[in-house]
Image 1 (cartoon, one colour):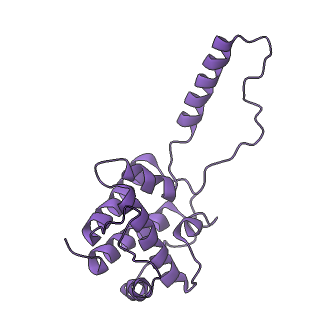
Image 2 (image 1 turned 90 degrees about the horizontal axis):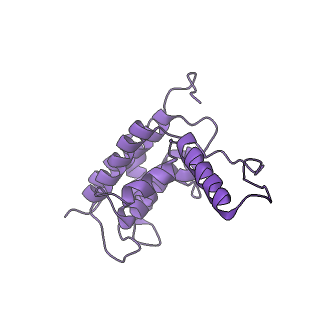
Length: 176
């Protein structure tokens, strides 16, 4: 869904400065991941930029469609176990092929599984994006994932957020 009436969101230097203040006031250290180790601003920025590249390649999805009907699941009592397994594997192949796009969250996780990031930079990158969105919206409880799932959001908005997060990480994150 492309919204051509609304220009992409802009994240200003003032927004990033506000986000830096939020980071300074954070209850938990922003730059320390779940491993207990600190990541550099540069490592987090590279993770966020790799997510931009991944979304450019795979495409972006606001949310994954949820098919709750279950009508496409094989449900034939006369099927053998082998036929059932083949039908399930075909279903999985079809489902994987039908949604190549990634959400913001899934892109961050995918990069964590590559040589461009890890679980710490994914976690910290998510926290950085939360800070930028909080500074942008002026709301303490705003979260980047929820912000990215708004009906009016576009791929350009997500790219702008990830790019702003990378700028923030390089500017305000710890050095090597």
